Image (cartoon, rainbow, N blue to C red; front, side):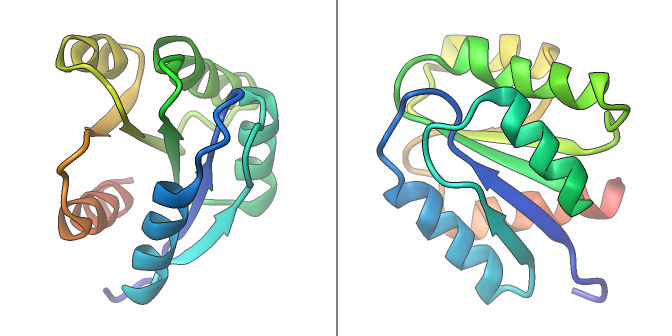
Length: 132
């Protein structure tokens, strides 16, 4: 990776399970990304504000609570309101296959479900950051 990309990993909503998000954050760091982790139970507005403040290339969202159809698009909307719709949003977690198209239509560029490898996730982040 020639450029060191900055990414933010966030856990929107009331989901308190953050092991997966921390594993993704560490994998990205191990591959040369600069990673900001917001912690659990953040609002879409808080995540978007942090992304703008930290001047990130991409935001990775994790949800295991089933609220992804509301929370992921809300982060995309908050970024747009802040004039930062050039920040790419990627999502992952326990997301039914039927919801993936809806999330992509709402502006979430990539979706990862259980079984995705760390290599898949890192490659996707690198790809979306390079295309930004």
